[in-house]
Amino acid sequence: MNYEIREMQPEDGEVVLKIFQEGIDSENATFDKEPPTWEVWDTKHFNLCRWILEDENNEIVGWAAIQPVSNRDCFRGVAEVSIYLTSKAQGKGLGQMLLQKLILDSEEKEFWTLQSGIFPENEASIAVHHKFGFVTVGRREKIGQMNGKWRDIILLERRSKTVGI
Image 1 (cartoon, rainbow, N blue to C red):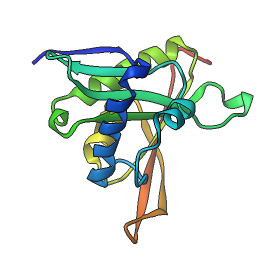
Image 2: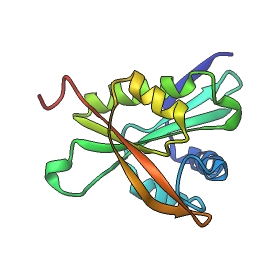
Image 3: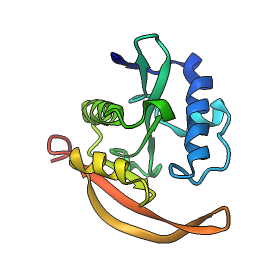
Image 4: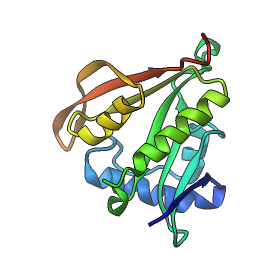
């Protein structure tokens, strides 16, 4: 099957949130208990570096976006990565496609550091991040509860070799 990455459009919002709900349901992608409204999601994420992954039937099977880690000017080039795939699209290397696109696009937009917080049980996501130059910088132990159980987060970051050097 062929896949294509394209820029996210506002009309993609409903499907983006549906895929986010799949991530919530997996209990391995986010602490969120329900997706936000599109307006909240749209405000939270940068208006650039937003990508949609479509299959050959033009069905959206994944998305990638970045959001600020701080509103302080000194951190304007630092962003947090979000990549979500439908369950049927997982395990096919598509997360790699989206992460690579996000890295290249973010560097073109002058971002010097990308970071991710990933549940340690999500080994595939951690491995993909490592493959693209992210390093593990720490583990936040029992940082939040999910369904009454404390969960850890692995912190990863990637420092650009071309931006902000």
